[in-house]
Image 1 (tube, rainbow, N blue to C red):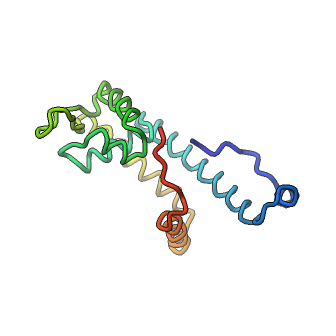
Image 2: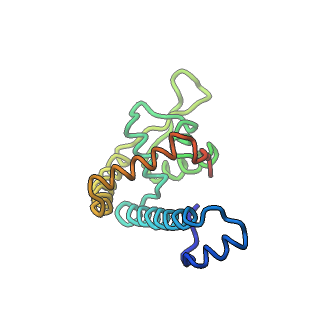
Image 3: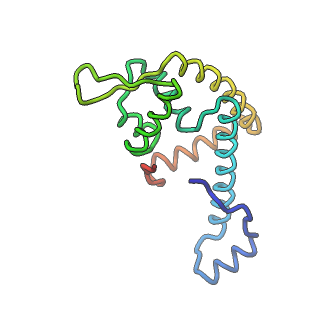
Length: 172
């Protein structure tokens, strides 16, 4: 899900609505709106770059990376957890990726009821095309921040994640 508000309210509007609806932190709301808008724009640009350079969705891209990191294969459930989707959603994603020749399913050697998903040679080739383009895109994006600004961003994001401020989701 993306942040859908493009027309951000002015600070004066936030103050007026804050008085009317009892907002205790107008500055915090303004910061959150700018942050959410920028994050949404960044993720949209990320998806567009992946599609343009490799034809992959964000989820397919991350599944390929997980499979590359785990050459012995991963279960549908592990892949689903790795990209924060349900196992049912991951099964549909793997179905499409298998048809595209990016991965294949093999019966688990120790559990005949389970399957392992593995990267194919074609999947390796597609990832080999996607990653360099992704790295260039990230380098361009991050070139707008110096080392100190990057350190601040990392500290702030880790602060949210490590303190459990952002709830974990398992969306579809």
